[in-house]
Image (tube, rainbow over all chains, first blue to last red; front, side, top):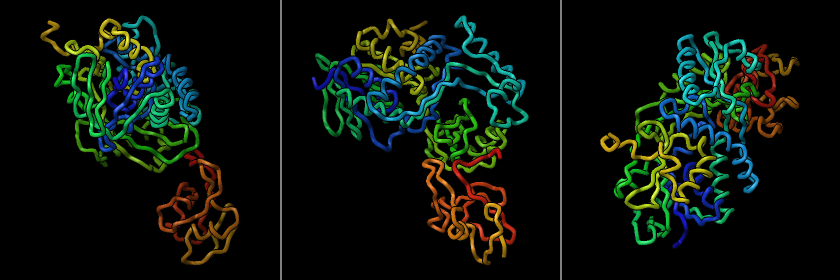
Length: 369
Length: 85
């Protein structure tokens, strides 16, 4: 065996899982694809977000919350190990509401999630209190209030990814970039994973290759139903600090830039559009009108890895135990749990028992019925 | 003509840009919002963004792209852009 575990994909999901594997003392080889692949981790907004998650899947809300609680220690351990800065803060998070209708709809959603959980992690905040929370900005006249979750935070996702890569290597793992996996072949004691740069044997394989995951696991009978959803973002020049609390479509980074996002589009083109820039800019300036004078320096698009019901997939093949697939659209929020509890469950052979709500079996309606 | 540079009336010539004024008036350049270091206009063609200044009240204006007009008010942009003044 070349390693205990081969992880396919060095995006934020694969890297967090591989980091978790080396932290547990196992050996890992991570195989990453091409620079020209879809690479969702490189287009991320940077939220470490709980509020609103899993309205239809209570287990997803619970997992998001658990990961959020693990995040501060996760990032501290990681940055200590790699001696690299990662900008992270957990001041809570806001989802702005620009009308009474938006406010009431948001309140109803939050209430539904709170009822499922039995406690209130998110509360509705009226405008007067919101103004006190954001003293440096003048809010647009349409801002009625927001939902505020004290557990939310934000991070620089590129620094996170770089730190995870260095963390894997520092703790003895190997990452081979530009080595797109072509095949996974089950054998007697494990699997053989092959790419253009070589072939690697391991007892277990975790496929976390984003939108490329189904093409690798479906042939082996591990069906992972995903769709891609394009999102576009805008980034402004560096501004004086004005937004101390990240919002779900508006956050100010530690560098001072303000990120405005994100669209949800059914498109495959990797370009950016004026239509989306207008839409994003319009919403941002309804929240903080003075942003209209800020210069935009960047617009990019990325493709969310979206399981069909929105909740993560953590699946182990029944035909080939030891072959795992992981797919989610919240790789940053879930990074802490990925590196800890998800990896533990996988290595202990308890994934189906520990995280049953996330198995891919839930998509097989016939079987469930 | 006369223009205002950080509140000081300053002689200038037709054909100059805001950037050329920043280059010849002492201590008038921007400071980097990243390092805080003093910066001066460089490319003179609108691609380097070192010539950012506050021109007639509008911040992050590229000085090399703005020809001077009599009475123009030029202020140095120090640090990150302010959108609430």
